[in-house]
Image 1 (cartoon, rainbow, N blue to C red):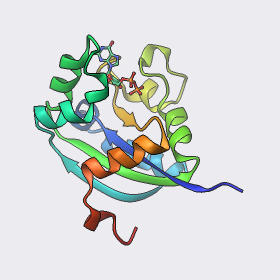
Image 2: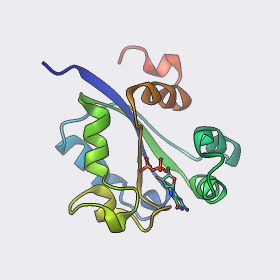
Image 3: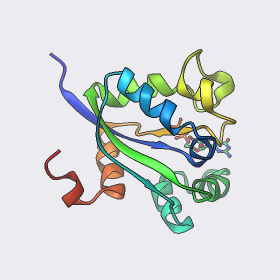
Image 4: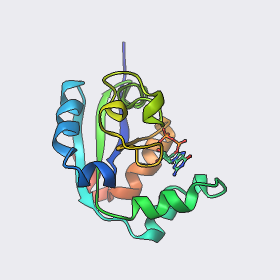
Length: 142
Ligand code: GDP
């Protein structure tokens, strides 16, 4: 038996700007995810730095945070069996040049940095990231 699981995803600013949000949301539903919460929001630079603080020591941190604050993102909590790993499979490798055919990054990403979508890398991080975007009130009744 599979357990229902949650993951936090974002449509990143490059994909929102290119009007890929609808296609990505359609793929989410085709893959059997239920969208349990969703919002479109523009992160401030400080908020992007907080979200990606785990990468603070990486050479691309500055570029990543500037990009993530460059325009609105669409953030959502998705529910499905094996949600974290299934979403990671659906989005593909970080660098679209290395992503498999028909993955979201292969289809829609521009580069390793501007790569269309985010997905939590563990159930524990999904909880932390969901709480970053959504209040207790918004999560209640899910
Ligand atoms: P993910 O889990 O596949 O999203 O990849 P990581 O956790 O390794 O990196 C987080 C995000 O940082 C990626 O999705 C990219 O947007 C960005 N990133 C990773 N590597 C690079 C890089 O070499 N250059 C730039 N500009 N951004 C990067």
